Amino acid sequence: MKQFLKSDFLKNSGKLFGSFGIAQLISFLLVPVLSRLYPAELHGEMEIFLQILAIGGAVITLKYDQAIMIAKSRSEAKSVLVLSLAINLAWTFISLLIILVYDGFIARALRFSDIPNWFYLIPGALFLLGCTNTLMVWWNRERAYNRLGSNRIAGAAVGGGYKLAHALRSISGNGLIVGHVVGLAISTLLFIPIRAARILDFDIAELKTVAKKFKSFPLWATPGSLVNVIGSALPVLAITFFFDKSTTGYFSNATKLTFVPLSAISFSISQVLYERLARLRDKEVRFDLSINTLQFLFFIALLPVVIITVWGDILVPFILGEGWETAGLIAQVMVIFYFVMYLTSPFAVAYEVYNRLNVQFMFTGLFALLTAVALVVSFKISDNVFVGLSAFCLTGIIIRLAMLASCFKLIGKAILTKVFYGVLIIAGAVLLGFAVRYYLFG
Image (tube, rainbow, N blue to C red; front, side, top):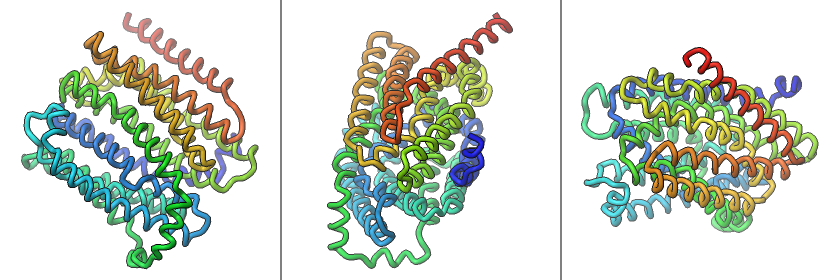
């Protein structure tokens, strides 16, 4: 562990996290301000918009962008980059047609009485998202960690600044959504290479070759990613359908205060871990790196997670302001699930590195199916948002831990015993936290 803490792996992850941490800090500091400037319903609309982007983003490049990292040469990686951007452009036009033709149907399905103006921002936002995701993998392959980090800071700062200005100047429309699109545009512009015109210099035959070579990504990674995203979006979609957009807004800000900070660390680690696992051939070295990473992630987040689990109903409304008590209770219910997501997400790159995308698809499909059943059935029976989310979390935690064990089996060794010890530690810490709370306040 001492060697791990001094390794270049953690230093490169630290570069990303330092920059991403600043970006997340900007977003985090804006949450209590925006919660007072925008009503919960508009936060709910923003969350719906983000989930639509996430679902569209799962197919916008057919996941060829992920193949950039494992391409054998730089020229092959460039061909995959061009292929990914071309597919992104094609899907953008398809999404535009879908919005223009089915806007009314989609609006009614999401319980809107009228078609919101921000619907027509979706195709452009999807294009920007596809470009950003593709170029992010390219710069990760190039180990341009400073560029990756500064891009996030700029996007968060400009997008956040617009959200504030929109509300303070009382401009009509949902400034949260417009600000997000502005941030995506800035990120895309800053990611464009200086000699971007060279992208237009490509060989059609080479594009066909790489499309065939990496066909497992559209065949397995795309449906797997789509199912995974739909599974993650289920709480938002189900809350919107069974309850209202204000409750969706409470859920959204609870997520921003719990999962978003954790995801900044998780994402930074995953980007460097992806590059490292793609190069390492020694099974023992791979496993040592991975298990040290897992232990590092577990212990740096354990205390904040326990605090939110025990005190979230008090802390979250204090941060967000009056009227956000429901968000605090949701944070208490969801934070252990988000902790497990944070722990397991970086290691899912093993499925791509070792070409086991079919196994990943099996797990993501199982996750989406079982959590959907748990969520919908519990909502129908109880008509209680907290009961439904509890059922969703419990089911999701079990599947994600099984997925983690599967990833480590691919990387090198089984870790079922360590997973069991981890569950005991988090359970014991939470029980101790509630005992302290009961002792202090009764």
